[in-house]
Length: 416
Image 1 (spheres, rainbow, N blue to C red):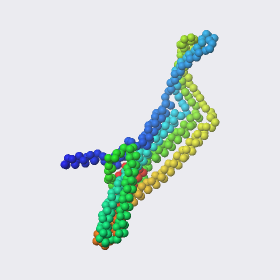
Image 2: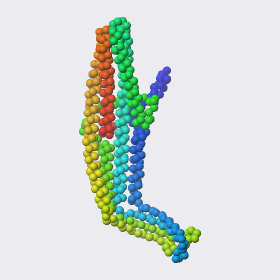
Image 3: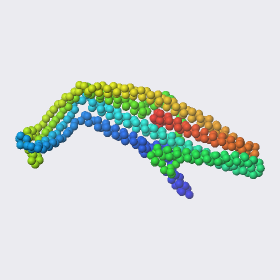
Image 4: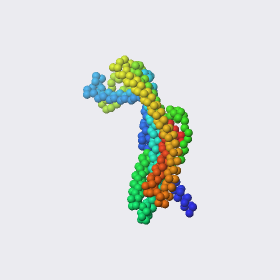
């Protein structure tokens, strides 16, 4: 018998899911995070492409011409092939700043991915907590119904004995019906909460899996330390900084037209001689190599370069304003999360005392009801007070867990 019991417990544990496992599963299967990961890989490839500006290019060309009449040397066709190796010696630092812009954009994609990952972690935590909250509310609702059913039986007995009026019995019956309806609503909320969690996990949540309780404990926190962690860790700050760096590189790249361009070209050319039936020779040198240095310099482009640089300056100023605004928003987020954390801890203490008082009040009222001292209304009031106190007490803990998750998101670091 003990062996069978052990096997049953082990089987149940295989289908249990804790919060960290839920977060890891979301990291692996959530479509939104997968999208950001693919965009990050795409940005890496763009950076690899930007290195092409530092490498030579090789082109191979072949041409064949057929003449309607023979030329003066008696040829009715001509053909030629060449291979050209080109290398840019100087392009006004365009290649350097193009690479810098690509690297900055890659950093933007990376920090966007990190911010999405941190947001997903918070969403999973809140969904996980909300599901446990709904399960606790179901438990309280079922206990309330059980107590009301007992009270209904007592009221019916009193009514049949002529001790209570019919209205007292009906009053309990109405209260029981309301509690049963509330239970249905609570179960519906639990289903939606579980579906929300399942969606965040990329549908990787089976019906057989149970959600484990949370065992996190509160700890003392220092706001200044939290702020320092926030400024060091937040991906959004790093993202905006990377965007600003990208704008700087774009601004410098836009000045490349102010400089001359220098290119080195090596060309090998081979002219054909009767390579195709009915072909002929031309005056081209059949086999030659050419080395060329090209210098070009655009002196005026209709003001396009100046307009582009002015646009980028405005965008850079706008980026600085966004960073300042983000700092203010983050400080507000931290303040709200910290105050919610402190409030939840205080609420737990208050709710614990209220629950003790509600239990004692219910016990006394129940004894008085059974002794026909307290009437039905007092008994129902005591029952409501107890149910409300239970919801508040357990709800305070869930509010604490919510605040913990919010704080960890604000500072983007695991604390509890």
